[in-house]
Image 1: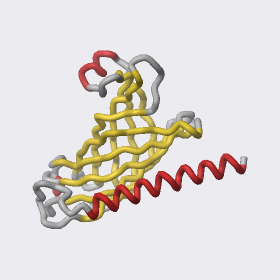
Image 2: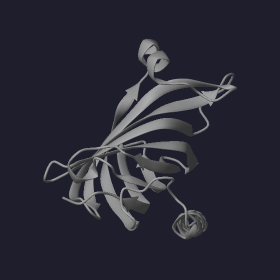
Image 3: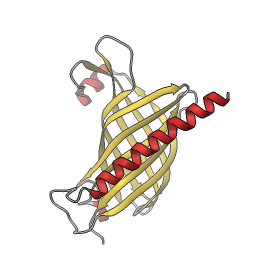
Image 4: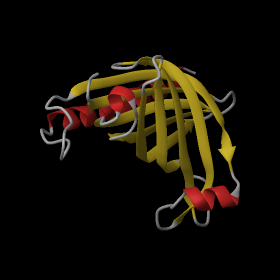
Length: 193
C-alpha cells in the first residue's frame, strides 16, 4: 500500500510540475494573443468538482460532432458538469463535452479532444471555450487523471463577449462513482462592464 501511495504522489507531483511549466510558458510568452480586447492579461484560475453525466455512443451524434485524428475513431461523446470558484466569475457552473477517441483497431487509450466548455457565473455571465489534446492516465484504476489545453476565443456574453485566454486543465475522474475534479490555470483578457 505504501508503494501505491508513493507512486500516486509522484504521479500527481509530475503532473503539477508539467502544469506549472506549461502555465509559466504561457504567461511568459509575451504575445499570447494576436488581437487583445484589453492591453492587460490577467491570471485565470478555477477549481471544480462535479460528476460525469455520461457517454453518448449514438453513431449519428458522434459522426455529426467528432472529427478524430488520423488513425483513430471517436467512440463516444463524454459530458460532465460541476461547480466551483473561478477568478473573474465567482461561484460558477461548468458544463464540458468532448469526443473520446480510440485507435482504429483497439480499445480506448485515454485520448480525447474537440471539447467545448461553458462557464456560467452566478450573475448569468457566460464564458465559453474549447479544449484539445486531452490525455488520461488510467494507472490508478478506478481513478483516471487527465490533462488538456483550453482556449477562450471571443466566446460568451456579458463582460466575456470578447474574452480571450488560454491555459491548462488538470483533473481526475473516479469511474466507479462518476465524481470528477477539474483545475483550470491560465490567463484571460476581457472587457469589463
